[in-house]
Structures are given as structure tokens and as C-alpha cells.
Image (cartoon, rainbow, N blue to C red; front, side):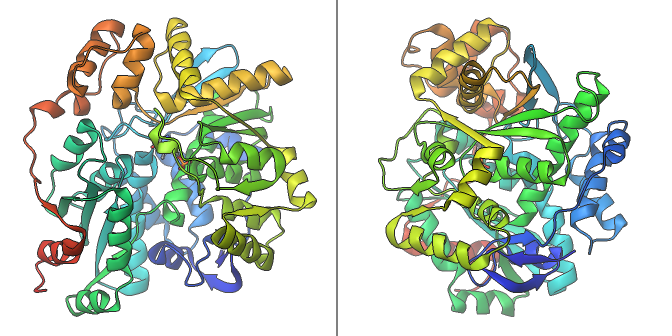
Length: 499
Ligand SMILES: *Cc1c(COP(=O)(O)O)cnc(C)c1O
């Protein structure tokens, strides 16, 4: 099976090339040329298997240029026993009649990005061996918090890779900062920069695209690659857990094979919900994909009206990982809905770049309305949902609460009682302050983030994941802070190359 670009259909690459390159040279995203199918009998068979076995079968349909041994090694490494706090990897938890929360945060950093970033390093190093021989892969990440830690944890001590993360010194929470600065491993490096997230991101982009830097790396047998969410290697692991959730519902006797389900996803960059779309297109019986947004509701408007308009105020919310106005992965959906018409996609993306806005025509709008529903909620509603869900027996984080709220609104508006999978994307202790204030019904006293963790434990009795609870006792390894101008120098230093 081959992959093409959303902006140039004459591109044909293998999955290894798509993963090693990250993004197509024309600026488009790699997409599978056809979506592999799962039959009802395969779903039945998979429902009798464990997560690792299911993952191997599903990945093999997409990574046809990987050998069975390679896929086996990748999947076993990523989801090895003990790495995730549930032997099911991503277990389901029923919170109400017909509403099943899919816990995607059982991994090392307690956020859903682990599901993909634990597997990506294996896929990337295997892909690099096939395409660029024995080069050392150098991953550069600019992060506003969660992605940096998940990437560090994924690439930690993976042979043939080095990873360097830049974060804005005053732009991440104390918990996120400590998660990164205490990272172990011989191939990792973390550095603060004096500036905001945009400075970090622009600095990384400048280094990435500087031919002089690339040349210097090549002389030392190294090359840059990307752990960014537009890499196909980050999307394909996410398809697995939606198929697996459907299989678990069959295995538990909650549904019969063939019954329809709805899926609700708290959405930012549109990656996680796009993975659910691929699962649906593969043949998992999904009726409606419900896209949940916070106050940054650019996607709610788009899915309801066909107008994508990023010219709007940007809100900083209690669900920060969804504070996004350009959802990059939407481009992949548009390509598929437009019947693989790359010229139309190029047109929309040019308009977006030039005016911050585009409008899709009625044919696309009809397809969106037939498969998607959308909703949004603000911070007050998020907080109220955390409190209400907690009283009903389940403590969830702010991002998950947005999804739960949008699901409840949808249920009230439609009466659609189809069994529903709600993606839960972070452990509540990752966002202790907001969760605590929701549970207490008032702002916590001026305590720091770690005192709030203790208060949340005291208030709810919910266990805090040990990797978060023990953070405050750890000594930071990485205390450097540099200016934006010195970032390239830092990269050379880390790689042991003379500038
Ligand atoms: C990244 C993230 C999201 C958004 O996922 P997308 O794939 O960007 O839509 C939601 N919740 C949490 C906790 C995240 O870290």
C-alpha cells in the first residue's frame, strides 16, 4: 500500500518514507491511497485478542512495507507490560448507561499522546533503516507542555536517536516543567528559552530548515526528523485504540458485533478524531463522530456551517491542549471527503494561509453533516461537568470533561441512545488546579501545584499516578536557559558537534 500527498496526487511513497519524511515536500500531509478494510469476522477475531495482538494486526494493514518481525518488535516495545498502568493499555470505564470512557492516559506521562509517542520512535527508527540507512535520527521539539514530555519519554534511550526539547521558560506549568527537566536517559536534552511558545517554535523551525545545519549534521551521520502530530507515524497508532475499544465492547457483551457506536473526542489539532474517522472508514460500525471543543470553537462552527475561520479571539482555557485555531489534520479529512481532489485541497489551504478563512462547498458540507456532529463548552461548563461527573462516581480531567459535556448536550438535543465511546485524554492529576476547584466548588487557597495534588487526593481519595506524585522530590537535571539566537548552538553542544 502506498501513500500520497493531500496537495499533490502524483506523490507515491511507502509508509516508511512517509514516516521518515514527516511531511510532503509540497507542504501536504501523507495519506493512505486507499483505506484498508476490516470485516465483521476480523473484528470478531480481534475481540478475542489482547491489545498488542490487535495492534499488530491493524498496523500490518497500513505498514505493508514493514515485515511481520519489525511490526512485532515495534509494538512489543511500545506497549510492553508495565509501561501502561492497565494491562488493557487503554481500558474502558462505564460512567452512565451507554456512555463508556476510553482511558487513553494510562501511559508514562499520563496524557493520551503516549499512545502514539511510545510507538513512534520504533516506527521511525525502523523506517529510517529502510530509507536512510544508518543515520542517527535527531528529534527537535518545541513544546507548550504535554508533547515535549511524551516525546522525551518515548525516545528515551532508543538506540539510534537523540532528542532535544525547547520550552518557554514562563510558559509551562510547574508540574510540566519538572516532568521535563527531570527526564532520565542518555540521549535526551531539555532547554528553556527566554521567550514564549511561538519563539520556541519559530526557533526550532529555523534550525530545521537551515541547509547549513542539515549539512553539518549529515557530515556527522545524523539527520533531523519530526515527532510532530502531522507525522503519519503518530496517527496510525491512534486508529488501533478505536478498533480495540469496539472489540472490548463486544468482548464485554455490551454490544453485539455489528451494532453501531458513537465516538466523542475532545479535539485540538484534529488528530485524535481523525483516527476515529479512519477506524470508521475501515469498517468499524460508527454512526456519529462527535467533535468536542472548548471556547476555541473554530471546529464547531466549521462542522456545522462549512465555514473555517481562524480570525477570532484566542482563549487561554483550563483545557490548554485544545487551545488551537489551526487544526492541521483537518486537511486529511478534506482530502478524503473531496474524493482525493488535491487541487481543491490546495485551494482551501491557500485561502487559509492568505485570509485565515475558507468555505467548503455543499457536497463537502453534506458529507460532514452526515458523519460528524459538533459542540463546545466554556470553562464554567467544564468545571460544572467535572463536579457533576465526580458526584456520579468518576473523576475526569478538564479535556475529558469538555467531551462529556458536549456528549450530554448532544444526547439532550437528539435523544440518540447509541452506545457511545468518550475519549479521555489526560489523567485528572495532570490538571490538578482546575479539577480541584471544580471538586471543591471554590478556588483552592493560594497553594502551589503539588500542594493541590495532595488536596485533590485528600478530597477524592483517587490515587495519583506515582510518576506525578513523586515529581516534587526529584532533582532537575536540565537547568539551562538560552536566548532564541543561541538555540542552534545548544543543539550542536548536545550533539557534540563544533559550531
Ligand atoms: C493533544 C491533546 C488533545 C487534542 O488532541 P488532538 O489530536 O490535537 O485533537 C486533547 N487532550 C489532551 C490532554 C491532549 O494532550
